[in-house]
Length: 106
Image (cartoon, rainbow, N blue to C red; front, side):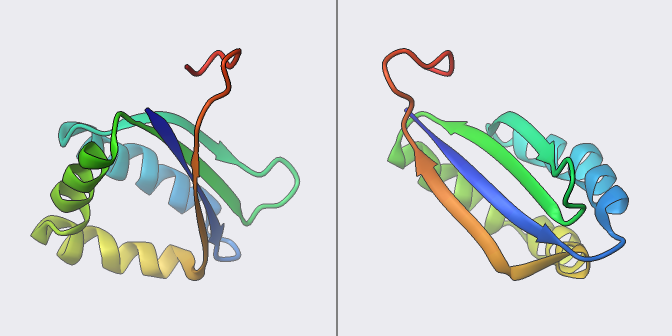
């Protein structure tokens, strides 16, 4: 099991719209396909920082989720265009993290 931590740069003035879109549309869409969303965060002092974390059981599960979510027609036609309006994809950072033995996230 590992976590995927994603850090996004949200375009100026778009954070409130991003949070609403992500929490009300993206999260339910991904969860319906099996994703486990472990945390959603916005920057406390930097209005452009958005971070979210998902828990993934294995590499095979990650591949299945990516296919079910990011290759779907609904993602390509509904979600992707709106995402591009609200966030700077060029600044996206994705990290895979493994919890240490004493982490409460194990």
